[in-house]
Amino acid sequence: MNFSRQALLGIGMIIGGSVMLYAMVQQIGDSNEQPAPTSAMVDTPNTEQAAAQPLTTDIETEKRILAQKQKERAARVAEQEKRAQQFLTEQEAAEAEALAKARAESQQYVANSAPVVEDTETPEAAKNVAQDLTVQPRTDSELAADAKKTSDAEKQKAAQAQLEAQRQAAIKAEAAAQKLADSKKAAEANEQAKVKRQAEAKKQAEAQALAAQKREATEAAKKEPPKSPSDYEVKRGDGLIKLARQYNMPVEVLAQANNISPLASLQLGQSITIPSRAQVQRLEREAAAAEQARQKEADLAKKTAEAKREAQQKLSEARKEVKETDAKGSFGVQVALANDQNRADDLVKKFQAAGYQVKTSRTSRGVRVVVGPERGKIAALALKDKINSDPKVNTTGAWVLYW
Image 1 (cartoon, rainbow, N blue to C red):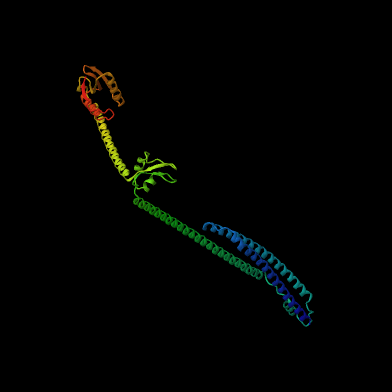
Image 2 (tube, rainbow, N blue to C red):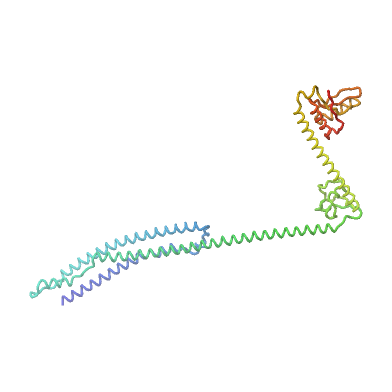
C-alpha cells in the first residue's frame, strides 16, 4: 500500500513538473514572438502617411531610401536576436536551477518515503525499488538541444519575416519607379503634343497672313487711280504705303505728288493729294527718267573715280621710275591761262582745294596757272592725265610745260 501511494505521488510530481516546464517554455516562446507585431507595425507604413509623402524624383533616391530602411530593419532584427539570446541564457539558468531543485526534492522524497525492508528482503531488492521510484530528470544536453531548436526556429522565423519585408519593399520601390517612369513618359508626350500644337498654330497663322496679303494684293490690283486729282484726309492707321497700295500707284509717285519723302510719316487729319491716272503716268515717266539720269550719273562718277584712281596709280608709278638723268630741269602741268590775276587766284584756290600744288607766272598773254613741279617728264605726263580725269577741277586742257 505504501509503495503504490509513493508511486502515484512520484507520477503526479513528474506530471506537474512537466506541465510547469511546458508552461515556462510556452511563455518564453510567446515573449520572443511578441516583438514581431511591433516590428511589423513599424515596418508597415500608414497609407495616409504614404499618400502625404511626395513622389520620389528618381530611382536612385528610391534605392537610397530602401537601403536605409533595410539598415534600420537589420538593426531591429539584431536587437531582437540579442534580446532573444539574453532571454535564452536566462531560461537556461532557470531550467538548470529548477532541475537542481527537482533533483533535491526527489532525493529528499525518496529518502523520506523509503519503505521498511522486511527481514526476508535483500538490500539489492530495496535498492531497485528506490531506483524505480526515483524521478529521472532531463539532462542538460536535452535542455540545450530544445533551447537551440527553439532559438533556430525563432531565427528562421525572423529571417523569413525580414526577407518578406525586403521583398515587399522591393515591390514598392519597383512600383514607385514604374510610376515615376510613366509620369515622365506622360510629361514628355504632353510636351511633344504641345510643341506640335504650337507648330501647327504658327503654320496656320502664317498661312492666314499669306492669304490676307494675297487678298490685299488682289484688291489693290483691281483698284485704279482716280480720273482727276482728289484730296484725302489722313485717318488713323493710314500711311503712304497703305494709300499707295489702296490706289494702285507707286509710293514714290504719291510722295512726289505731295512734295514729301517716301519715308515720311502722315499726321492724323493731314490733307494729301491723290494724283489722277494721267498724273501718275507722267510722274512715273519722270521718275523713270530721273532714275535713268541718276544711274548715268552714278555710272559716270564710277568711271571717273576709276579713271582718277588709275591716273593716281600711274602718277605714283611714274614718280618711282624717275631718275636723276631723265631731265635737266623741272616739269609742270599748265592748267589755264587767265586774263587777269583775280581769275588766276580763283583757279589756284580750286586746284589747291582738290589737293594740288599750284603756282602762277605772268606772261605777255596773261597769267599762267601751273600745277607741279615734277622732276621728270614721265611723271609730268602722268600728272596731266590725272588732272584731266579729275571731276573736282573739271578741266581737259592741261598740258606739260618745261621750266
